[in-house]
Amino acid sequence: MTGSAKRAGAGSQRKGAAAGRPEPGKEKLSDLRLIKRFTAYYKPHRVMFALDMAASIMISLIGMVYPRVTNLMMKDLIPNQKLRGIVIAGIAVLVLYLLRLFLRYFVQYYGHMIGTGMQAQMRRDLFSHLQRMPFSFYDDNETGKIMSRMTSDLFDVSELAHHGPENILTSVTMFAAAFIYLCTLNVWLTLIIFSCVPILILVAVRYRRDMREAFTARRVSTAEINASLESSISGIRVTKAFTNSEKEQEKFEEGNSRFVEASRRSFMAMGKFHAGSSFITDFFNVVILLAGGVFLYKGLIDAAGYATFIVSVNLFISPITTLIGFMESYQNGVSGFRRYVEIMDLPEEEDEPGASDPGVLNGDIELRGVHFSYEKSGEILHGIDLGVEAGGTLALVGPSGGGKTTICHLIPRFYRLDSGDITIGGKSISGMTAESLRRNIGIVQQDVFLFNGSIYDNILYGRLDATPEEVYEAARRASIDEWVRTLENGYDTQIGERGVKLSGGQKQRLSIARVFLKDPPILILDEATSSLDNTTEILIQRSLDELTVGRTTIVVAHRLSTVRRASRIAVISSGRVAELGTHEELLAVPDGIYARLYRLQFRESDADTAGLSARAGF
Image (cartoon, rainbow, N blue to C red; front, side, top):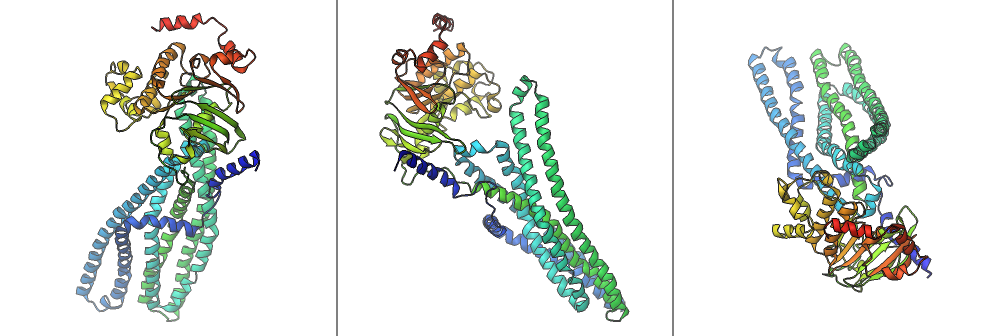
């Protein structure tokens, strides 16, 4: 098999893992399969659910009492002047209504708690699933859209979880009981009224599909607004710095207009459904009025029976009205649950069969014939062969977009290779579990991410079981302990969202302290100081130099001053290793890429750098 064929085969396997499972919006589950998956979430609540349904049935059956008592009064108690019977009947109805009061409270409270419990479990499952998703998922999905599925979508699902079974069960019970009872009053009049039901079913089926599509479109537009808001609010400082508030307003209005249009279509579909179905229920009253009047005129029903029939027919119309109202929550819930399972059905990041925990990794790192491409772009790396000895430092330099950061992402296996292999200590990383591999690697990046919390919590994130003294020692080694102790709240100081209250250098030192605490044998420094000013860079570099001692280190840098002491320097250009050697060896090639980059950065005398170091106290 040729190299290209191998690469194509490996690439298809890597991407084929996702192909076997649906992507959001790519495959639609049938309603039956969707309901089957939905009902599985009732299992932990089955006892309370059964009680809730029993209470709902009792509420429906109590609703049958009033028309029966009305019929009894008009045919017997009132004509025969049975005052005691009238009082007893009234008291009996009141007692049943008091019972229904408590039953309704039970259904409303515990029914909603069942829905909330199911929502919490779905949110828990979704969050756990998101934690195990590969990097590629987050490359293609915006944070705001993911949050929309976890919040507003699942809220509507919980409403369906409670009201759905209750509405269906009570409506069917009332419908059947009403049919039987009305037949006892007059079979033919009952059959005439029930003949209108197929018309209502046709109306529901006709508009149900339009409602489902419209409600799904509205959810998509809601997610887009959330994504836009998340982006705009997170970047508010950039917006203000560039005075682009009007542009952000314009972008928001575009999304808001799409939401309004999607809502208009959904409300139009809902309006047609409600108007059509409500007309059918109104038509029932006309049928009762005319048919009942004819039956009374012909002597086929007496006045008391006719009056009772008019009162009782509400028992028939009520469940139909309930089902009409239920259709809206059903469409909301189903579309929300469908969007939930679309993410849940995406493949998680998985280890290879037989993958094991290698323990502490201290060996050489080697990349052998590594080919890689992101799923929506062409090949990024073309047969990379690189290596660094245990305890040594490999520096990656070269033009932006050449593939340096991609190499850093492949070593901890954030993405899978198209072909080739990466080994540590002679062991392929594909044979290691992702957790054990990443436990051995510490990463310091240019774009430092800090969690909203205290300084202490953010350092502790490096190793959650560390003692306070270990946290303080990590901070000292990162040269930040002295500054932290000058703060009013010390290590308990809140740093704000993404560390907004800290400077760039302070954020970087926190991230370095976090890695000191983790104490990994392998270190990846991806442009760790490129966004800092020269003075801060020199101070941070001192911490990084201490951090790299005794560790196998991969360094990505644009500033060549930070890589001169590296064991080996690789120039990565257009996804290939263009040059490889030590600092002196690469400078000895005057027309080489490294030598040209060096001359470009150091046209001025190195005395400037020496003077800056002296002023910084080195």
